[in-house]
Image (cartoon, rainbow, N blue to C red; front, side):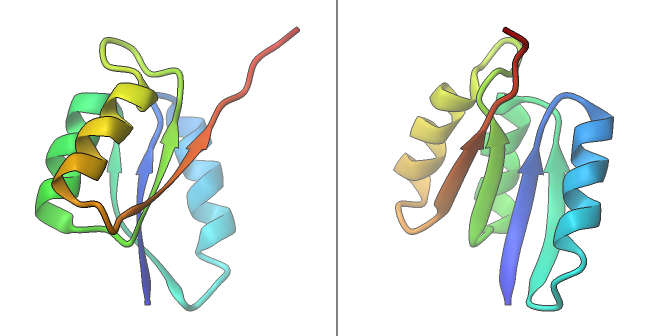
Length: 86
């Protein structure tokens, strides 16, 4: 089982990611966070296999949160996402 923590400050994006990932029986969404700080805290308690994180989060960026998550749990796989208009 792949346990995934979703991290994005937009509910619609989290909903879309959840819908896509729930199609795969080997993937379980174990939590959702709306900020980098929340992602770090939830990662420490939930111990996800994978953290799917938005790079552009308010207050603490996804990059900063990734550094802290990897420090506390080096084996966690982190996938960074971002979207922007050009």
